[in-house]
Length: 363
Image (cartoon, rainbow, N blue to C red; front, side, top):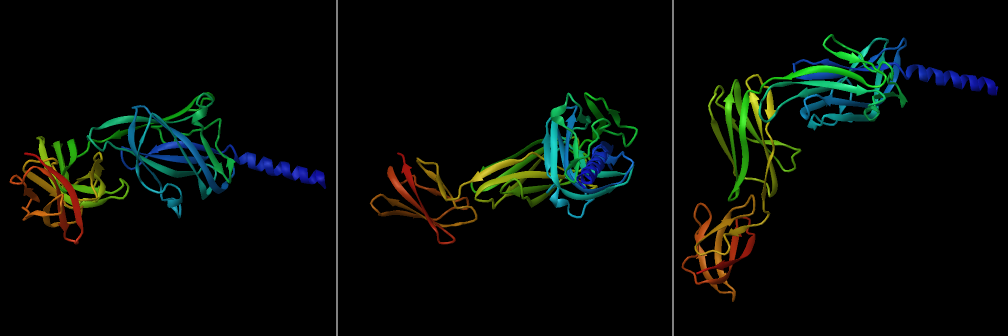
């Protein structure tokens, strides 16, 4: 009986091991010149059925740091369990990617499965170019281990690690250093962005940007976020469309958040393709302000973000009202006729909240 159980155990282990060297990795071109698909293949003689429980691989970029977008392909019923967003990542020269989870697969001998889509982009300057992308494995590159697991068991072929899904993919299955190369090309953006800035002016954010070249461009969508994660559009500015001259654009955000405000441009082409600018951040205080301080004449009053000033009063330190002000359109008051000294500036806002600031008047 024990002998039979022992032999049965050996058969089970042998069956698992027979599946443990059957999966190869590959890269193929996607739908555009800037897209590449990470794909796996069953190079064994039997069908591999089970749950994909682990992926580990390293992408290497021959051009150095290359901005790239990654998303898990909608091959599976619940892709949110794999990669939870389509965010942009600025990978380094060599960057290992890992995933653990449980996704059902059934790969017949010779069958392939697309897993992850990558797309090169140059979001800020719109400069085209190419990049050699490689998958890496082998004994020398042991810290860039190639690994795929099915039902928790290693399923990556460590001898013939990679395969070529198309003629343009070069494969070297060397025992010490295995490589798979594919070339992608980043097309120039419809807009060459010279600059993009965001600055605080009183209680507003002023956004300025400039382009030196535009081709087939439709518009700019200005987006804002409180955390650089959740974005919403706050305005659209029509672009010149076709131009080889310097073009300057401006948009004012009249109602920024209290605290941090992150801004970026979404540059949209006529064919609905788009790219993002770099991110700028502007911080607004959560409370009213009065400046400059000390002052000898004009004082600027800034309400709490989202509020308006109804009235302002100047009080001396004994509690005596010195002057009530009628505010100008730009929320400024004049204290030039007031004697020098320390005062309290009381600001009443449209929600009936009141904020007091100490003001020094110089003479």
